[in-house]
Image 1 (tube, rainbow, N blue to C red):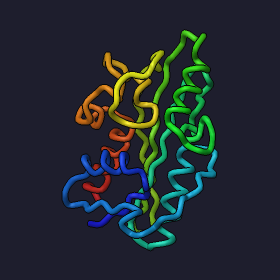
Image 2 (cartoon, rainbow, N blue to C red):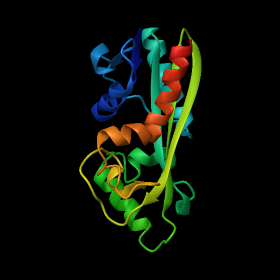
Image 3 (tube, helix red, strand yellow):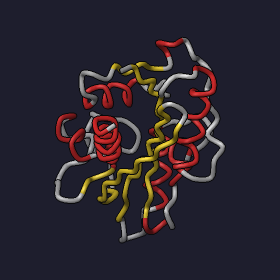
Length: 191
């Protein structure tokens, strides 16, 4: 079965491909020559995932899925949330985003946070939504060089390393994206 994954993010594509079972052939937007940037104009993570999936389905008529993720920090009332990728500006720079977040938390002791991913799947024109989360805390300085986004400052509960320090094998079993993807794969296998 061919399934388009509505992303241009090579890190995300690699992560998801490593978890997708072999009967499903994952096709990226680059592989179908869809080079447009899909504007994330929804006010929720779920809304953005659905918006991206609907855009690709309308353009191609093929089964597809899209995801959107956000980092929600308790002390910041869930910010950066839906604005996680562009928290420090439209340039979507990971280093700038982390720096802004660390500055905002500099005098705050409650550093609890969670990542949330929503995956929107469209199969034969029907929409299905799957959510995954992982809880942890924001540490005080960047550690590690693996991963992307906020990975160097997010330490998942039960671990003493950040997502950027953990091996991709461990991260891919506990991450928010992995948790949402497991639900999506279970649905595909059951149907």
